[in-house]
Length: 339
Image 1 (spheres, rainbow, N blue to C red):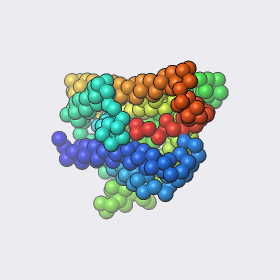
Image 2 (tube, rainbow, N blue to C red; image 1 turned 90 degrees about the horizontal axis):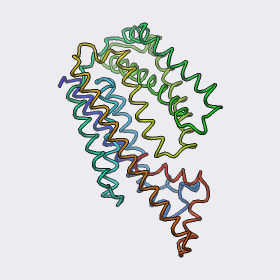
Image 3 (tube, rainbow, N blue to C red; image 1 turned 60 degrees about the vertical axis):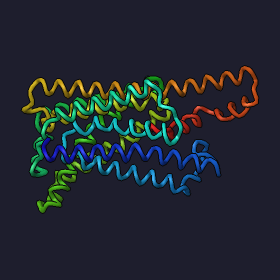
Image 4 (cartoon, helix red, strand yellow; image 1 turned 90 degrees about the vertical axis):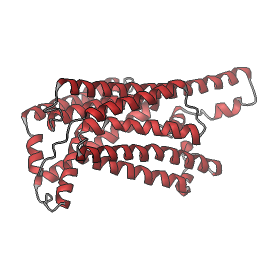
């Protein structure tokens, strides 16, 4: 494997390890805080005094930083799908540390993600790192990518202006579509900024070029828009639905955008490209299986609660009070180890 791809691979895997672990640390911190105060799902903030929760936050920041640097060295077709490894790590750690059982289908999902990731790594293209921010600008203003940006922004505007008022509250694809389309542009902008920072640190100053600041403003705009509509999606729909759909759409669009702008597949033969696509589909399948398993567990838990309510056991009142509103239930769901 080429040295730059190797660096990107190591950083991407390290990022997944840190992010996957951070969910478990935050979950344990939230549990400890809930035992001595108001749970976060009911508006409590005692978790801010819990060292484990802060350890999880720091771990997540380190993971995101590693992911940011990974995009500098390796193509998006290699880095982005490896984000699924964080789901595996959090699921395995939750099995051992939080006593949340990983069922056979969950193990199958983990294996599928690993197999798909290995196939992608083996057939990943060599990253062609630009030598200046002006070269990146030329890639961003090539006709093919300008057409992609124009189509993307047209779809985003149509979703925001027409489809959101019409069916935003009933169709998860509206909010997730906006997030994913803007997310792909975010990755392209952040990759450009990362390369500019890398070149500057190597002694080739890129800060003085206006293109660097244009990429920065585009990234900031896309990130804010992405967060706004992701929060809307999470507030409207179950996280067990939002997370896998968002991962599939975001990863697919990011790979397409990178292939157009940075020509990731240029010079590769058809067999290598087909292998990468098959690996990507395998990772997506594993991700869907993992989330499907989690959703079944949540539904089973709800079913048990319904049984308690019918038969009037001593747990009925506590079960009923724990589900005071859909918003409170949703807030609790957000703190599961997978999200």
